[in-house]
Image (cartoon, rainbow, N blue to C red):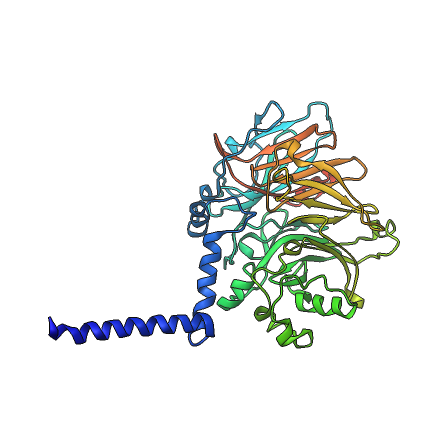
Length: 462
């Protein structure tokens, strides 16, 4: 036994040294702390999940590790209003092969005589893609389809971005890659993106193209990591960038501290030392979560006294912050903090701002709603309580609201439905993205497309 004592001693001393070294890495940041902390933090963050993400760990792992469209299926809650759903009609469908449309269902208000069209983006079982878009009429006809599959898949899942150009080109950011497709189905371009170091990916987990896309005068506006970018509709080239570090400096120049809540190390480094490169070291994980940039159009600019065409409305989810920016003067013109919670899709309307307020931590439980915010005061009012239609999303969310018709269109990703209806709560059209009974695929975005444009753009296709 004595002859083994030196061996046990060496093992014990080695273990003690490893323990001491590990403690030093944690408390004193000695080598290789900087190498090991980022991946460890990334694993812990994925294991914990986000409080607004209701998927289980198993569901998130399956979605990350497989290319099976059924990895993203969800169990929908029954629609709270009793309606007669019918199978969609695919007899006039033109596009890439798709597996499950025969199971999809729709409801349409029989009192509406004028045919309308909706472009719906989400999870679809195309032959070689799991994300895509379809065009469907209020008569339940699925007319066209687009399979979205970037050549170089990005760092995230399907994302929620969808936009239409003035000539009928689609832009989406499936898997975190911004791509453009013609109305007839061909790919126009795929925007460049690059891998980032582990530490960068920990702090900015959505470092590719992400969230909403807005079209304005030949450009698509969206986000690339912590940057607001505008992209040429014809080439996919980035024409303008506004980094989060720029926004922080511009706000500080106006003595506004609206971006500071999730930062660290200000005492040591100070705002004067802030750069695009060291921003990663100065923030906690996912400090901003930029999720919508809207551009004030010429048509709506006249309804605002203090804003002008080209001003940007930006939603910052992690800060419960919405603000208006004028890029040409580097000014923050307006902001509202704390009137919404984990919100999405802040949108310029006619003289006011409307927001998809996820509101997941309300005292009464998750209470998603569409709210309106006054521009000249701090007023907030509920335009529509989304629980009326069974929407319970704690994250994501897109809507369109027509100030003239007063019709609201909403994507319900949590139940795999696209919903259109009156503020009274009466639905006029519903698409249920059913893969099979009891299982729906997600619906991430819905856009209404005028019938005259559908006819004009489709006439160009063979």
